Image (tube, rainbow over the protein chains, first blue to last red):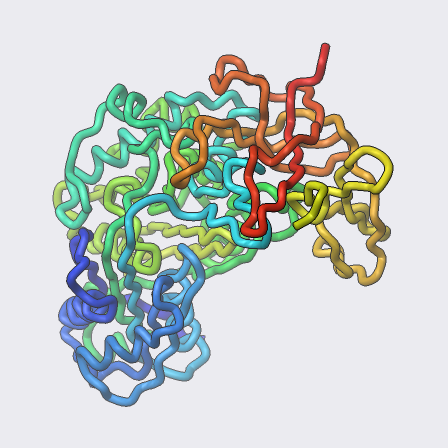
Length: 380
Length: 139
């Protein structure tokens, strides 16, 4: 099977665009990704479109209605916060399978404000605040407190994740925020669900990102290998059965399973990875994934953040984009925005936040429920 | 409208005569326990092996969050808790009769499952509900 390459990729600056339509926001990133590799919509053989909020509203076709109705097949994808990564992986798989040699993948989301999750549902009376909490900040707080129970991880260590990612975002002009956020500010911000303060929750923003994928032969034919990035691994998993599944949505076992398979597919190990964009939907979650992705041993995540190993300039920089915590988290766009970030570093085009000498990077997302998507990318 | 409180979830059972209890559904093949009726085990895939069991009323605190921001009309703060019951079944609910302060909450602390009115919440028909809660075990 052919290798698959990212030849064009881009994201819009994340923000709030209540006056624009979802397809319009997605179309902007699609055009930017096409421009990044000098191709047009007429070169694309299929579109894989990821969006959650309008999952039943043909967002991919409406993107083409904005940028060129060429009649190509469109697949609309929804997979919670793994939506963008799933759209990307479907594009990758179509080239692997030999169906196409050039495809476009787009992820887009327009978010409201406020808490996600915990809607309750069912019959009778609302269960929120009666049978615990189903809000996302609380669910991920409990996942963090499971780590605290096992390893003694502290509120301060969780908060340091947010300090780091907010610092990184000051170097990323496409992040929602570029604001230094010291530890005392993070810890003293409004408590949402202990130990997650408001500044330890990802930012609800609107955004889009897109990528153009090609087969190896096509990249060579087009003369695009200079800035191309090879997809060394593309893996998805769902949540294998865990004893606390019914009450604690599990983000750990699906990540561990996908990471193991991704390293095997790439023929690489954690020590080969130069940077990671992982799913910091809440500060508590990032800590878990250092261990889940094998960046350190079990129980060492607290030390990783204390020692600065995951900061820009450290042993294995994590979320140098600013992460979901500060770059923002437009659900359907996030997976492809991660691909943009890692690709930009592998190309040596990341400016002030460049991870020096980066050759191999990893992206990771989790859609609660659960879907995990992991990609390993390498400079061609 | 029912003249007696209704169960807040279908795995809370209120017998005609006797105390309320929580019911689990256990796979006869692999022992996995579920909350709510089902016919197939999602751990091992076995079919038609699920038997009902009465869940224990004692357990220990596994994880929690102190919720300060919830949806409109929900009283905060409160403690959302994940408890491991004595038979290994995990269950989630409110931890009550403990200050919502991390210094007052210990992992592994022994808790009892207790039953009480569902914080005064009523459905559209005006029915009252019986809920379960966790509270620290009496020493």
